[in-house]
Image 1 (cartoon, rainbow, N blue to C red):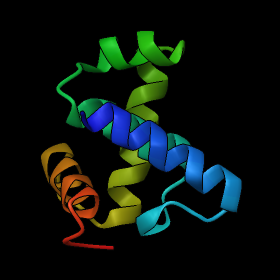
Image 2: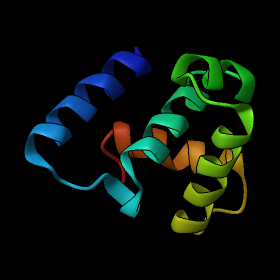
Image 3: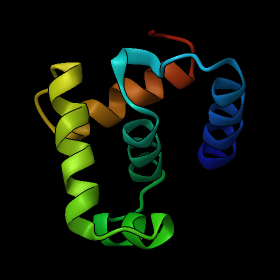
Image 4: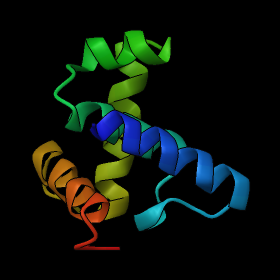
Length: 87
């Protein structure tokens, strides 16, 4: 369900060329979405066809951009945005 919403959201954004919420890149948004689904770093890397190191780098960048304290906080932020609680 989260992945479907994420993919639909990314398609709409790419058509509008609007930035992802929180100043995230589309890839950072995508990585957070996969992790929010419960995928491990390795599983997300496989889905995106990148290395786990690349996923960790995108995650680290997203955490910094959001000013989040941790992976968990960044994922909670993403879920809040998807549920319409935050922007």
